[in-house]
Amino acid sequence: MPLKSAASTVNGNEPGVYILRLDRRLMKVGSAEIGVQKRMQQYYGLNTSCGLNDYIKENNRDKIYVTWQACPKDKCNELESKLFEKYSHEEMPWASRRPNNTDDTWELLI
Image 1 (cartoon, rainbow, N blue to C red):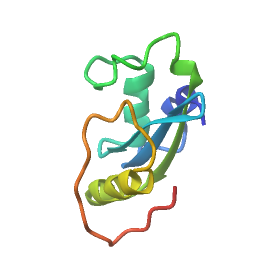
Image 2 (cartoon, rainbow, N blue to C red):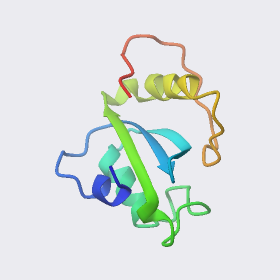
Image 3 (cartoon, one colour):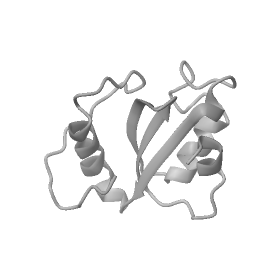
Image 4 (tube, helix red, strand yellow):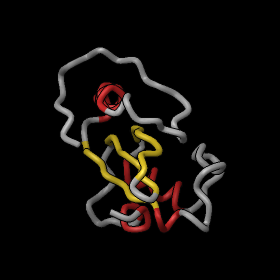
């Protein structure tokens, strides 16, 4: 789904994990304990506190696509770690940190 749509979705603002792609290229996997919709609103609105202002700009934000999975807040780190593991063979130029969680209590679906 386009970043703009993810920021304005009516699906609610549940915590979860997400994948950001620009022109089909994987750019970042992340988690949003504050809620995926709220995090996408930060990204799309070019909020300076979101941490991706060096990457997401007005000229590319409408080319960014998001895939996400909702999960309980206390499972975000676990699933983000699983996303990093799943996509470890790909470069993620917008990812500045890598979580290190070895729990295996929740299934990654994306």
